[in-house]
Image (cartoon, rainbow, N blue to C red; front, side):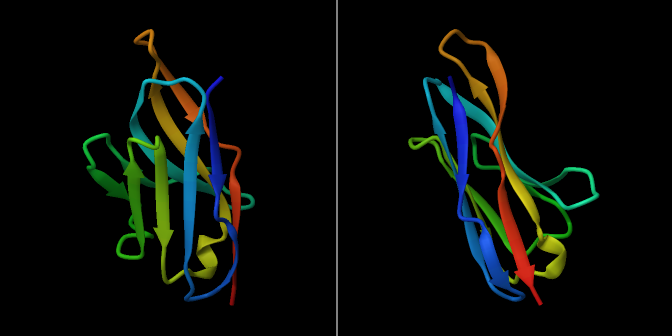
Length: 120
């Protein structure tokens, strides 16, 4: 059973920073694209940032220049460095990854979410 476990959320003042981590447990060969999504109260889940297995990144316009996504393929982990946090960044952040099983099949995985709260 493959699971993605997030950590690093919490309460931070506006202008501060947080680093989210997401690590995979279980038997899996590798991950293709990995990413972070977020969902604020009353809003739909939205993409924050993605990174391919070759390190190509993509960001939502609202976080460009403030957030940085990275990954460690050996550790099967993905990270999100969030700087200059704003009130509008407050949300539950979810890790997502497309996993490649040893059988050669693909599965889409989601973490349980980690809360980020920004105080002004």
